[in-house]
Each structure stands twice: as structure tokens, then as C-alpha cells.
Image (cartoon, rainbow, N blue to C red; front, side):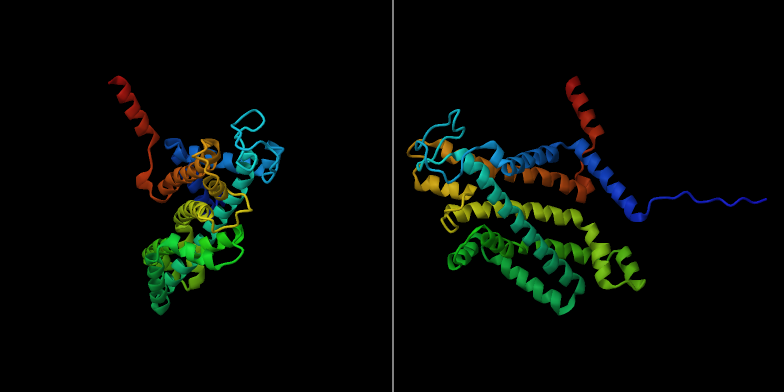
Length: 314
């Protein structure tokens, strides 16, 4: 009497891929702590910005304090030349600076995906035109282009600055994603999907894009870093709205108020250090993203332990 064996339910292919990806992330974080350290720094700044009303009782525009007061128990980061609390400006300014950075980085990455991947897979005149246009955008210097655009745009608030930075910062990402798309389009699994009669848009979204996800995230990280620095540069040059408190406008007013000549280091250090630390945190996170996209860069925990044991013996 033959017995029919009921197959045990196994996870689907997308589930397996998801499990393998999470296991790879776990191995990366076990061997390299830099992404964890970077994520902790970034999370701390985001938490400070979100909880600004709970951390300070003052308004960033309030001018009723003693000007240029050094850090004290009442004003943890001192006051400006106009009598404003720097701690309040630092916390509320972080909201705008981080918001502009992430928004511009998302816009630049989205444009890089659309203008880099799609024309590369379609090929023909579309790819030739977009490749030429991308090369032209790469030749134009970024900061002078931003200065010219913002100089001719009236009422340059945070939203306008985010749009300007995002619309001008996609070229490098598009160039990289185009080259990777041209490589993946010749792989066996893409050719097999094409021979099976799959729609080319589905092939691009379901087959090519998931294999480039880590590269897209890495582009988002670098675009965000560039956007935060570009926003601070434009605000420092006075091309933004000086009435809106950001880390860049803090540096602008510190320079206008001659903070260095007056010895008010507490007016310059917080926003400058915050911009540097946020950039550092995103760069550390990118180390993990690089290892996820390129297994050759991964640090093996067992190898690290072996090296540490050898060093201890010596």
C-alpha cells in the first residue's frame, strides 16, 4: 500500500531572499560595529530634533535673554548676540536641516533611479540622450549651480532649497545606476525572464531593481550627506531665508555677529559639530551598505578574533 507524502510547506523564494538578506545584515553587524555606531549617532540627532519642545522651554526666536552669555545651567549652550537661546535654536534648527537633507536626498535618489535605470534598460536613443544629459550635468559645478538658481528664486525657504538640491544632485547616482543596470541586463536570470515573455517593466522592477537595492540605498546616503552640506552652505552664504532657524542660518548669524572676534565659541561649535557628526554617521552607515552590496568587503568575525588572539600572544 503506497502512502502519499505531503510536502512540508517551505518558504517562498521572496521569503528565502528576505531571510538570507537579514542573515547577511546580521553577519555584517557582527563583524563590523561602525554601522551600528553611525546609526546610533543619527538616531540621537533625530530624537533630539523630534523632542525639541520637551528638551527646552524657550522659543528659538525669543530675544529676551542677556546677549552673548556663556553656557550655564539656565542656557546650556549660551546665547547669541541678539539674546536668543542657542540650545533652542540647535534643537529646532535640527528639524529643518535634517528634513531638508533627507527630502533632497530622496528626490535626488528617485531621479537617479528613474533617469539612470529606465533609459539604460530601454536602450536606443533614449539611453543615448539621457547619458549625454547626465554627462552635461556632471560637468557643471554643483555649488555654483545652486547659488545661481537660488539667487533667481524668490522666497527660498526650506522646501524650495530641498527641491533645488534634489533636482540638481541626481547625476552621479544616475551614472552609477546606469552602468550597473547595463551589467545586470545581460545576466542569465534577466535573459531567462525576457525569453519567458515577461513584460520589460516587470523585469526592471522585479528582477533588476531588487539586486540593486543596496546600491540605491548607498546613493540615498551620499545624496543626503551632500544635501545637508549644500543646505548649510547656501544658508551660510545668505541665500536662504535668514528668519528660519536651521544649522546653516545659525552659522550665518554667528559670522554676521562676529562670534569668533567676540570669543563666543559656543555660538559656532554646536551647529558646525552637528553637521560634521551627521555626515560622519551617514558615512559609517554606508560602510555596512557597501558590505551588503559587495561580499568581498565583509569582515569575518572569526578572522578578527584570530587576529586579536595573535596580537595578544605577541
